[in-house]
Image (tube, rainbow, N blue to C red; front, side, top):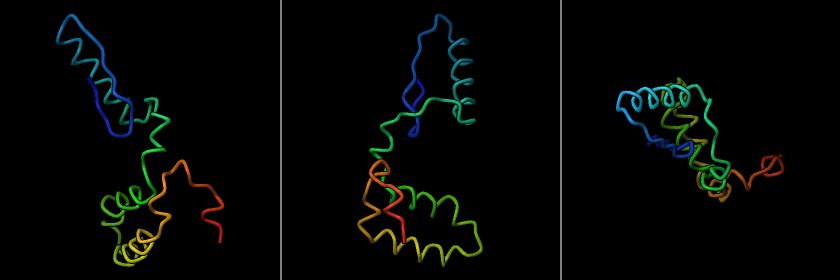
Length: 96
């Protein structure tokens, strides 16, 4: 069974362990390349705040302006907008 946070669980049965391992490697490669079908319901489970927190820990932390970005993002995280799911957001939520 293959389990990833950003994709549906995938399982398959094999007669030989080597076939299973080969299949699992190929699925992992496809997942890394973005070739797996994504769960459409994921947008109903992930909030804007989740995405912003992930950005802070995986992207912004390596940038020269990380302190300023962290300040701005932490301000947005205090707003109610950050608690909404991605599926519920639209362009009007970000219009000036």
